Image 1 (cartoon, rainbow, N blue to C red):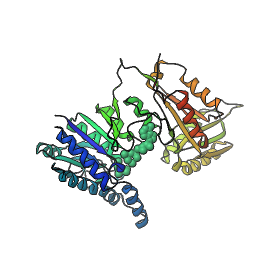
Image 2 (image 1 turned 135 degrees about the horizontal axis):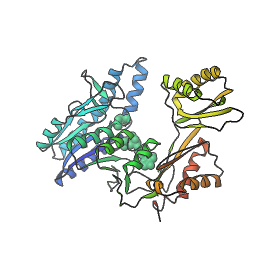
Image 3 (image 1 turned 30 degrees about the horizontal axis):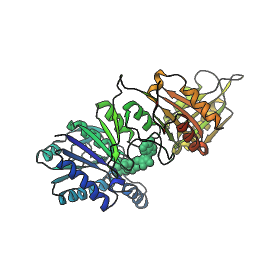
Image 4 (image 1 turned 45 degrees about the horizontal axis):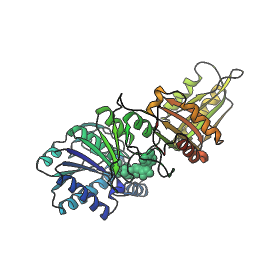
Length: 410
Ligand code: ADP
Ligand code: ASP
Ligand code: MG
């Protein structure tokens, strides 16, 4: 008998018909002799709807009340699913995050899990019930309800799988697994049968929305096996595993994109020790999260510094830089929100030179100008103009022939 954690995203339970389809699947899994714990998201776009309501009703939106409001979406979904499972002759009990033993810190709208003590979930399983747990929620030391943030249900599922010692954590979504690139952008994007945690971490950190980055990090740290699959076709999806030294490693597994950044450039700044330190300390002081940083070689003792920030922090970053530029005598500050970061990811890059050259050649052959470059051991990222992003993704996907299969080391 296996113990499975099955997580269903918002689209998977968007309406009564979808809810019943999920109940069928859960009941079938139980009849095959498994113990099942379900983690569920709010139905469809309900989380967005609750956030919209809060914005319409209130200007201040106190964190405690926001968390109480948002987590109501999951609470509604979990009890409806239990009813549908019960209709199929399988006992099911719903639990809020707090009842399921999710202890968190007190950061409202973005709480971190501190401990998971799922006694009540275990007792339900021992009674022969399916336990259905509301995703993305817990309770703070002050005994307030907390929300783990957008995409938090994936983290609930992984943390619960770890705490219960489940055999696998299945993340059901509206696509059949993790793809070589966003299937909405590239028609011939291909489902990956397996992918390593390290590669998936890089993918989610660089724009792939599925699974939520924090959940992948948690699974990697705690060695929880993941299976990302479709709640519509029920076919086998993508298995996420530890990298195995004997495993054949793809040079390139995926191309991901992130258009949520903007670029800031401080032009004509003096090239001497302490300038970058001063500017980036000031940015940190205003809570601006800086990602990619590039400094040009200096000409006549002057240089340019460019960096990326999230779109919604551009205005703050510009204000800080204009202030600092005036103080250190730089020429000008420019901001550009219309950029996208495209990243090529593959574990085999570590031992296979030439991937960067192929990326640059492929883009050059299509007249796509590279604005910035960054890399890690298993990733090469380029920043391009947002209007060239889709083409860049397509030509890199074609260039590495990802539609045919992973590009393996020969
Ligand atoms: P859920 O609601 O199930 O939690 P999301 O809606 O947050 O899931 O994310 C699923 C979406 O992510 C898919 O519909 C898909 O279009 C998109 N996506 C983008 N890039 C990828 C990729 N490389 N592999 C799989 N899905 C991707
Ligand atoms: N419903 C929440 C959201 O959409 C949490 C989740 O589903 O992960 O962000
Ligand atoms: Mg979603």
